[in-house]
Amino acid sequence: MSQGPLVVVGASCAGVSLAMATRDLGSERPIVLVGDEPDLPYHRPPLSKAFLAGKAEESTLALRPESLLASLGIEIVAGTAVTVIDRTARRVITANGRRIAYDHLALTTGSRARTLAIAGTADNVLTLRTLADARRLRAAVATCREVVIVGGGFVGLEVAATLAAAGAAVTVVETEQRLLKRAVSPAVSDAVMRLHTRHGVGLRLGARVIAIDRAGDRARAVRLDDGSVLPCDLVVVGIGAVANDELAAAAGLPCRDGVLVDPEGRTTDPHIVAAGDCARHPSRFADGRLVRLESVQNATDQARAAAAVLHGLPQPYDKVPWFWSDQYDVKIQIAGLVDEPDTSVLRGNAEDGRFSVFHFRAGRLIGAESLGRPGDHLFARRCLGEHLAVTPAMLADAGTDLAALATAARAAAAAPSRTS
Image (cartoon, rainbow, N blue to C red; front, side):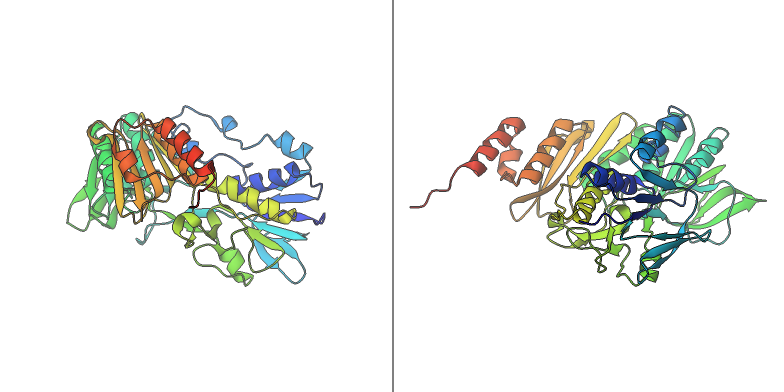
């Protein structure tokens, strides 16, 4: 267990979690947390919801009080990017020329908003990823009436919900034939579509933006590939995120839309770990395939696992992936990874928007989606985390009590096996 300096590149949720976990493990090693944003580390989920709606101020966003981090001996270097990792000398170099030595380096550089591949820019074509983005968007919202949101993913739909609730006329443009296609099942896509339609949001599915008409430095309309023109005084682009892995790649670390790490969070360099949005790791919830997850849960739990590795207590990162999205008065919750099931079971009523879909592959539960049914979500997380054996037939019975089912499955798992 080294007591040499730990440098954390990325003052993100993962970065702060890794630094805090290092202290929780009893380490007194020097810790330097370097971030390229001028702001202290903050929570990102409220940016598209409460902060954008004007219901939360910046003072409520801090991940940890600055005074707490200082009291724990965690030095924060804000507003400067690390531009070079010198693996031979074991040091990083920042944009302002500072050289910081490390014994171990943690990469928690996160991801950035993907930009629209259309030539030119405009003052009112915005993305939402950082607090600076959120400030610009919140200021723009005060005077906008017609909004076009490019991208029907979670960020775009959360912004759509917030702006529609504030009285703006909102249209969402999505290239796929359904919302959230790469993230949720068709049943959930349909429910989310009905939810937004009910709140007056226009949906243009299977459509692609080909141009943005401008008047001076401002966008005035969005042109689609079907020839239609959508007037607007604000465009929000939410078409996914790209891993910030260029720094790692330049240092010779293997990357593939994310820094490649082993199940414990190690890179190919024994002195470097990576965690959070920037890391791609093997997951049992994807049958061992490499995945890159963008969620608070993953950033927090994977960072803790990486901290344990640096403390000499390695254990495979095996936490159940889970995620939530608040849109209007509905909470969408996902547990596990729900891609490529061979059997799905719906509980509840999809028409009223309060239901869950449990997904199985080869008879094994792999994930669940819940809208307005938090108990179902917690049940799924428990089953996935504890490897509880539940079957499609068990869940297909609407009368099945899930809490009792979990208790019975846990008892069955704990019972000694009998041999004849």
